[in-house]
Image (cartoon, rainbow, N blue to C red; front, side, top):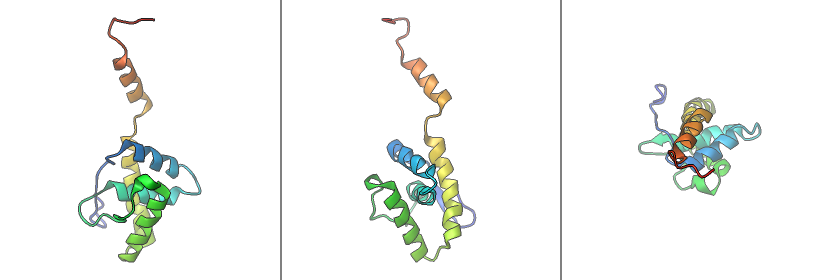
Amino acid sequence: MSKRLNVNLKPPSSLSVAYEINALYWNEHHQRAGIAAALGVCWSGQKRPARATNPLLGVAVYGHAVIDDLLARGWAYQEIMEVGTEAIKLVIDALPHEQRVEELEGNSEGQGDSTS
């Protein structure tokens, strides 16, 4: 939760959206839209910003809609980026990391029934 603005954040519910936001975040030209999109999809509770915009239609468009919505509510741009930075951490943490992928791959192979 952001203590400053009392926003509850939760990990994103869609892994595919998390991947798209992550890619946007690491693009230097669209990083701020990625941060804002992360804030929108991680927002928990009522009054989620940019409700009318579906992140599946494009995370960059969604991120800009989140910024516009929160600016209209009186948020400062810096506040959006600060809370969004907390949210992008949740998005990145939601993605499978190399060690976790290796664990999953190890568990997906047949236990003793290898055909190779």
